[in-house]
Image 1 (cartoon, rainbow, N blue to C red):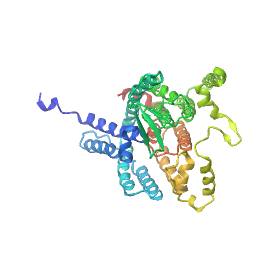
Image 2: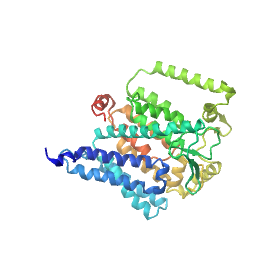
Image 3: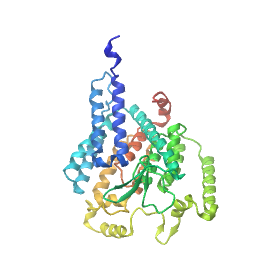
Length: 405
């Protein structure tokens, strides 16, 4: 045996590791964990470095993994979307340079073999679960009154202020005594949506330990959007797998109805589920009380915007002002042209979905995520939806068992 064989790493393992690390770095970077705040938008640079290294080494392999030839159209449309958004949002030179690093990430995702995408979904789910399974115990110790070291932290020039317990953040702006869990990330809603979408891409494998962790964390975020998405993906999962769902729908509705009824009566309605979720589902004169994605002043601004010529290319938005998100903010910033370009981008890969039920499911969840969050190009949103769109549900379940990692 040659001495060199003792320390050399197999190329395919090295490529898989670099690709997985780069994508995971981009994935969590889009969720703004506190330890990446100093990098800001530059988190994409190390992520792109790992991915580019994987692509270069893969090219020298006997069986490279970046071999797909249908990448040109989606990547071209993404380039158009990225530079258009930088231009209309008055991005500086750093924004335009950053686009090249994002292009490397999207290029790799559209060139990598589909079998690798299934592994990537599992890799992301496991990595997130490992991070969260460490964060949750410290959060529970904090709730139990155990003293933990902490420092004050802020994000976005004071837009967000936290007490940073290093393994998790506590939002100082919370209106409730009980802090919602969002681990090391910026908002509980962002984390809840991310875990739900990972679970969506893991359809058919929810009994595995890492997906159970994601389910538990989804509940702990007390995010209305995450809860609604969770219920929807449960039924979509059954529908995609051709299961008979009528009885299951009745069972789930009875369980949900029992929980809701209990929440209204338990402790005279003074409980977390009632205060954080159910009260937001009540209707008032202005509509659904939980529809707080935009502030009142922005609603008036948005209505006047729709009547102006700015609706074509969008209008500048001051991000030092808080309280606004969702589809209205995206359209306000990027106009109808931006909306059309993003829609075309999603269609470039979704229309290739071989299973009609998967296509309709991904389309529905994509629209709902855009409606609530308005960040269709975040890696935490795009990657799970893209991975699921590449699956052929009836065949891939058996294939994924072989591809377990």
